[in-house]
Length: 260
Ligand code: HXC
Figure 1 (cartoon, rainbow, N blue to C red):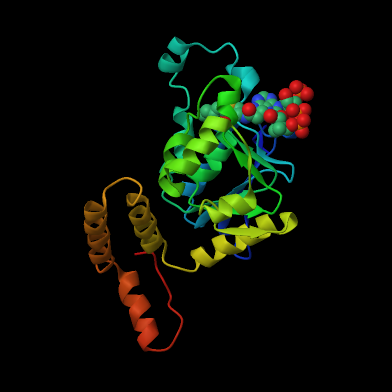
Figure 2: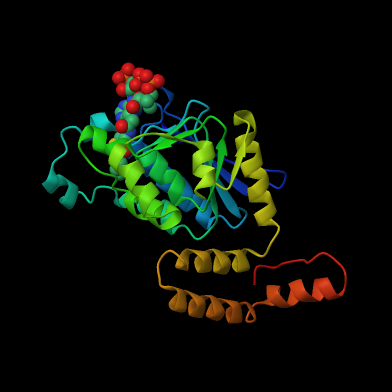
């Protein structure tokens, strides 16, 4: 493989799901710069690849990712954070226009938890462990933890997670709406790929508009979000796929989308 810290392949019956497996087992997939650069590169490639409709990010059964690489951060300085644009490369995942599913087993801690939450959907194994332990090592979440957990799960839970550093279970993450489904650990990746395949059956242009609209719920107030959604909805009528989808329904057949 061209990568040192990850594996990247196309999977599913139609090979239309991009699968990235974080593969730095000795460090429990600690997210060193090299790994994040490779992840960003792989996501960018899948984003440009027209044959790929959805992406799955996973780790191992022991660890999705145990956080940013503490050994690498140890001697990092404030000024180098600024001049080097620390964490900028992480945005590739949150900015990707295609759906990204996190398939989480084992530890998803610190930046690992934030990476999962950055994805559009989380599927978790029963024994997955989430947490934002940054305060334990004298820092705070820096890749969205304080913001996305607060928006998804409310203030009290976000505060408890971020201020204690305590881990929480897959069941708890599910109860709080952070995770959409829980599976046996050995089924998580397979189910995430199936989910990617299901999404891939739809028009990719419509999926992109839909993802953008849901994301708006996290970025704007309700009135603005509703207005944005309506514009996106109106916009679907400028596509051939909207016409095809509705025609197929009326003609009682499967749609044949052209992504136009
Ligand atoms: C660097 C790490 C690491 C990390 C584990 N390792 N987590 N290296 N950065 N985040 C390394 C260990 O040093 C060790 O290597 C090997 O992985 C196995 O880890 P152990 O601790 O021996 O395993 P175990 O006893 O099973 O404990 C697992 C664990 C623990 C509970 C996940 O490793 C742990 O607490 N890790 C740190 C979790 C954390 O604090 N994450 C947040 C990081 S800060 P060696 O070679 O030493 O034996 C962060 C900031 C985000 O993420 C900000 C924006 C991105």
